[in-house]
Image (cartoon, rainbow, N blue to C red):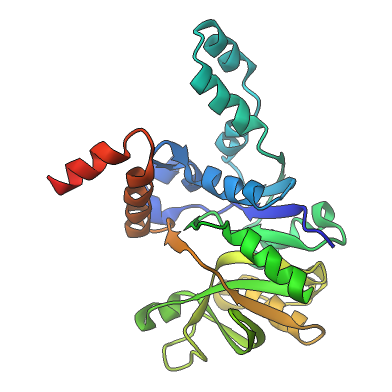
Length: 284
């Protein structure tokens, strides 16, 4: 079945970016000239996704406003004959069909994904975590969709991480079946280095079969009293094959300050308007 839908959980508080996130959703913090969540939406669209559900919480109206139609702004740009900015404005609103649902209670990533049950129906779907910004020649979600088409099972996007970073992530164990793809035999959420079965970390991109919703419903709260999606996927693994796919590209964790700064520098250097001058500035 073709993957047409994607879910972006964006209901977190963004405490690592206080005080900025007292008034602004962390997903709206700019990387050069676009908010972080727009990079994620564009990745989904460039991967062939047609419908996107963004999971929001209170005080996230700015996200909805950003992707809304802006007739007053478009009219002003038309009067100014500013074709470049008008094109940017109109393209943004037409990226995809974007829907929203509110997560009333912060119950973990598994709980947030379960909020998409009615939107998804019985279709496989992509999940993109907005803290993870990808720089890849082929969009990461597209890479995972291609893996799904080979295996018809849940796909976890993974890469190797440094040993001292292992406790930050969900870590998978598995047997390689072809280049970059493996059947998952186990997973541990944020293990110690000694507990970790490998250095392959799940990095913010998934293709999930819809059976995941039943698994979430039967998953008790785990670490932090939250429903962990890794626990639900482990249950799913008991009834069908789950796969991990090593994707190509650079991932930036913009949920922390250093990752955000690295992403900003990377995308600024590639920006067609300011890239060359910014490079000169850094060299000076």
